[in-house]
Image 1 (tube, rainbow, N blue to C red):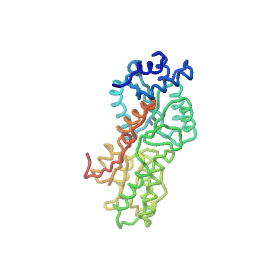
Image 2 (image 1 turned 45 degrees about the vertical axis):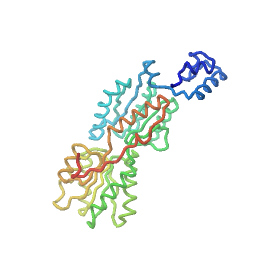
Image 3 (image 1 turned 180 degrees about the vertical axis):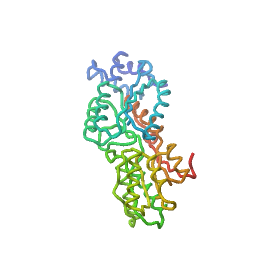
Image 4 (image 1 turned 120 degrees about the horizontal axis):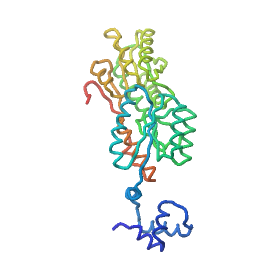
Length: 341
């Protein structure tokens, strides 16, 4: 039979109210008394049922998700997953607030993080931008005791509590391996297309990509990376310009968004001269491009898993509970035309 708070009170020789104050970390208990209660908890092997305690107190968890607002298909999908999760989260007494910020706007993101801190929410998940002002806002959150989870793009060496996203170095290395093998003996340079190198996930993908090309395909030349800002019009212009400057262009690794523009540029290549292309995120746009033969492979991350993982971690942090690391690991999926779900 599991020990109860009544057992703790009897073992320590204190009142139930004193046990409650110690278990909930509230003041008003003398140090010797607190030590007696803690010793009784250890001796009895008492494990607190946080869910039951929260239900009894009618606690509602309040979490914020800060997501870039643009026409990035993956971010739109992330929002859709968040809306779907909101329905079941409400049954678990979790309230989720969605906060929009402009894409790649570090000042707006830092201000949003400060606003969450001011509202004293229970936790926040956000798509990170690696900028000093964002890091400073994150430190202020940590100092106030509010847990933060980075989603999709991380902030290494920061006070965030957890990262819900794929291993982006591994994603870049995977893309380079696929591209190098697909190209075979075809000559010509490779063009890396980023969204923005302000975000760590794009920097890591580029680093992993370049490292494998150097290690395994040293004969391949890599053009300077271009940044499309996840804007389809800009991506189309950048890829088209690269094709004009380098008619022998053999491969493209697009690791940001703006895929509608990328596909328009690819469709304009002469027959037989289209570059082998690896993209990111399986959306309606990239699915159609795979089926049409414009893109050769797509690396994907499960946005729904990332949203659910962030919520689980934030709730665990709010409860002072542990995190099951294996459950929160986000895998990299590889899709070709032949294995589309």
